[in-house]
Amino acid sequence: MEKIISNLYKIIKGTNSLIELEEDVNMYMHEVFATLLGDVFSQIDQVVKKQKQQEGWTVIRSDEKTVQFTFGAVTFRHTSLRDKQGNCRHPFDEWLGIRKHQRHSSLVEVKVAEMASETDYRETARVLKEWTAVDISHTTVGSIVKRVGNAQAKADQEMVVELEDADYLPEGKKLAFLYAEADGVFVRGTQKKKSLEVRHAVVHEGWDKNGKRVALREPKVIMTTQPTADFWKEVQAFTAHHYSLEDTQVVSNSDGGAGYTAEKFQEAFSQSKYPVLNQLDPYHVSQALNRAFGGGKSEWKEEVKKALKAQNLEDFTLWVDTFESTLEDQKNVDKLQAFKKYIMHNWERIFDWRERVENPPKDARSLGAMESNQRHVSFRMKKRGMHWSEAGSEGMVKVIQGILNGTLRDVYLKHQKRSERKQRQVKKTVKLAQLLRQPTRPSIGAHQGSISLYIAHSSARGQLLKSLR
Image (cartoon, rainbow, N blue to C red):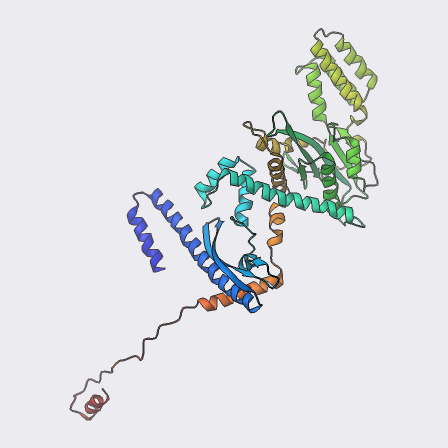
């Protein structure tokens, strides 16, 4: 402590502003904690080594290892040992929970991935260096995103495999209604003129109203760049692990594009005894209407809207054909015909789901939350000419999914949590390391001293004192 205080005095004397003082003290604080933790790790490594030697392991060598923590780079010595089967292992790393070749702590990796989901890799590296002791390159940020996202992807795949191998469906939450929407968003790939589709589903239990604001109740997302079949398997596995849908009316919404048809929803939610209601997304209907009739108001446009709302096919055909007869530009004719084909192909899906059920919930609203939820992907992955590799895009969307669902940290750290038995071993090892580190008090021999009597040396007691000296 005296040395730390002395160094703080030196820092204060060597700086000429409060800003410089705070920066230097912050740097020194990181160095002190990193050095102290490195010393403790090295001490525990010696204890773990002795324990393994007693079990018959043999020492190979002792090396230095550096791991980047949020408070600085910690350097410590760890011993390589050969176990009874002849395998080379680092028992202290296993004891601590460090992977082979791991250079950053798990907390650093998770925080880097979480920050990278909001901003680009270079900015993530810059902010980390500015505000923490973590100094990494933008390429390392990308590698960490892939690693953390891969953990979420593996957890999703495990759910799929578990559902396929199970003899019965898991017991989940029971609901009267469940709402699901799905769509895709394209991002630029690294190959020329090739895009990657991020397949995205949102599942929720209804709506909560807070004043004038309305939010989805218990929203969960499933995202992936994997093929359509794998995407729907993840949707099915996710909902089956969270809900018991046997008596649930599932209401779905999509634009009817390839991969997001009514049949896909019916297959994904086949455990429900009710047919899945699948309506055409009102946003895409409105978008198609504007492309065909223009953004302004017109008699034909308003009449087509009325025909769609009333589900009157005859009136719809009449007004579309009438409008087509007024067009002279072939491009506009092609747009109108494409609109008519789109609507006719999905005519049975153009309805308000609340009119198709007997007792809709009191808080029931129209579906159409997909577009706003896709902003989590589009805002991060479609700006400033970004291009994505297959591994990079999958890692990023899985990180975003894990953050939105609140599962990312648990999924990434689940293999590093100690059991009660392992934690008892940790306590014993740490206690032994503390005992071995206790400093011994140096021997200074017998203490000497004297007692003042304040009497004449010629007296009897004075003569006795002389004889004892």
